[in-house]
Length: 390
Figure (cartoon, rainbow, N blue to C red):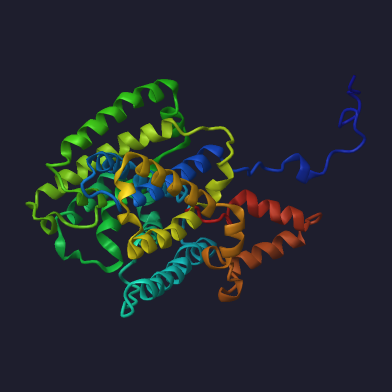
């Protein structure tokens, strides 16, 4: 029985303050699972993209996949960019987590092509190679985050910008700006979403409803094969570049966005919320994303995808499984440990100390009873040093 005369019950002394109020900073298993499953679908989609010719079944699934797998990834990126501002720590993480990997891998992909296919291949930092467009887009989107957090109707404005881009062929290829602008609404959608929205789509009723919705999407994709170019799903060109009238750009932009949102909701509905064997791999998806492109490109250069067996159902299934296994291995901790120096470098030597941060540290150090552990706890609670999520 607790002695009510003692100020702390049966304990002689209160527990240490840091133990009383230590915040729980565990990662959300749902989002790590979603990121892992999305990056697996990205890898499988890139593998399917090499065997589309004369293969209507694969192309049907490919179109369904390309309707939602990158939008899902972009929405998650937007959701975890909600707290981004132009503070020194956020900008530092943007540079080390996005700009530096882009520069390193752009050079690496250019050298790889020189060695494997084209000895005269030029390096162009303004024309992203293959999948590196996403890093360019993420850089632009995150820098624009304060704008979207300020305006009153961010999503309609982003849809308007994407629609205008889809009928403006003069935008050009610098930084793959067509994709940056046409995927912008997905990023802005992630910014405006809240945890309750994700709980809503994870209800059992939504999970059941998603089955006929996906079946209908497969049927529509099959119907669209002779009627619509696959290039529309890449969102990397204006309507005029595809030989279509200008007005079809905004129409298809809005239609694809609507389909992307619906199918992404179906995808999230089936993402498990509990800790799974692959949950920890969600922290390494950027590694799988950046590295698997070398294998896809090498397979293209070397003719791996021209093997007749890949035009048979068993070969197609085997290629899909192989792609999923490879990208899973590329997300594992040993790979992350080896390549962290170029994918997530710290680079403290490259940045000056933030005067405001130094003043706050001095103030904390002068407070009676302040300790290094307490200072670290305060930094973690404030989220000031949170790592940029990709």
